[in-house]
Length: 594
Image (cartoon, rainbow, N blue to C red):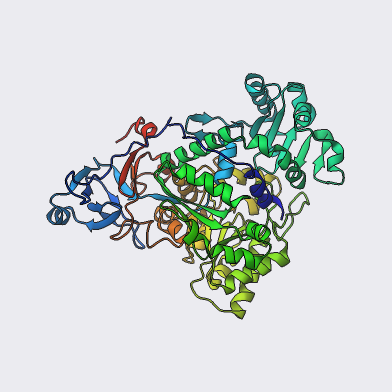
């Protein structure tokens, strides 16, 4: 397998151990809906005193009161009726704040987060972390100054020092000699923004014990520049894995990810494509992290591609998948039954997505799965009634999925199959029509437009394609269910930022691109609540406020429906309620609130 799939496989190989996350930004002290001291009856809690936005239905619906019993919603409606039916309910006054369903993040990768977060971050744009903001930098001279200061202040002889976030379109040329000019004694690795490339200095090469002869014949290694990319990076990662995944720092990163989840109002996350490499090892780590009872659930979607290799074939992989939910699911870790993740074309950050028309500089995209294997996988899981999730970015990569699906639909018709394309960096209006006709759904990353459109219009894609990245309105107009995800760390794990991007379609350079592809605030909020739940086939349990659903909420200091759309990303998350338990976000509550 190529590209991002290989990366995800390799970066989690040696993850072991666990430790408690720090508590710099949020509290895990919970105000619980307590049982009566003398009996086992669970108290009722009545929420009122602010707008309660249900996200139930096709139009905005605001209610006066919600009543929960334990982890279940048992009443939604008028306050007078709630008081009449539940006179002894514990009162929670929203004090003019807003209650919504807890946000759902349907596509994150904890292994990437755990590798990135505890290391140095010097990227084109700011990154908000639990313990502060890592300021972005652009321009070659400015970038070199930042990494020089970072290396001089933090790197040590005999220990690898990683810096993540370099991108040549923002930071200019980089090489082994340039890093050597900063330090020859301290080992340094500069990791590309895409996680697909690295630059090493002499000390790093010596520390890793690698020789040029080991990479003979590998066209994706520039030894003199210390540059290892794509296949060269993948050949190098086994040498680096024990250093990159040192247990203490790795688990520190996972703890930081947990803080980001709570800070941003998320009560449900999903990882499409589990495991990365070691099923038992990764699940053991995850169980240890979730044993701390953080205020969110984790849902896992098996990787058909990875399990193909681990189990010795597609049929063997599927047989193993059939056992996962019953054998391994727990109270807050759940394997989603009859769902699978597959991989089409390459990553957008490396401009390796497959495009129908070539890139402006003449380079070509890559397939992540050989096409014969990819078609075999889609047909196998289609015939066995699976909901199929496919990583696909370019219009050629997306088209290939649609073409294979059309053949399977003709051969073996299915209704409500919900095959979901993930990411969808670039596609056309006509392709959206094909999706509608085939019953295909979407989980997109709207952040691509904000982060990449300006640069990609000048480099690689050209003006028309770059300004029309992630054409969400083409999907919404056709009533195709759409969810948003961060694919962390391809975007910040901030659902409100993703919604903001889709509503305004303004880029990092304040360019207002493809305004015909803007969507309404309600459709954007659906994409991080009820439609995100639908992406996981969980819309009957979470994603909206309705009787019988789980008591997962987020409390905001303002309503996204009553402020200027440009301010949506600045709404403050005050607290989450997870299965009836109240969790205050301390750092956010330090900000001015209404």
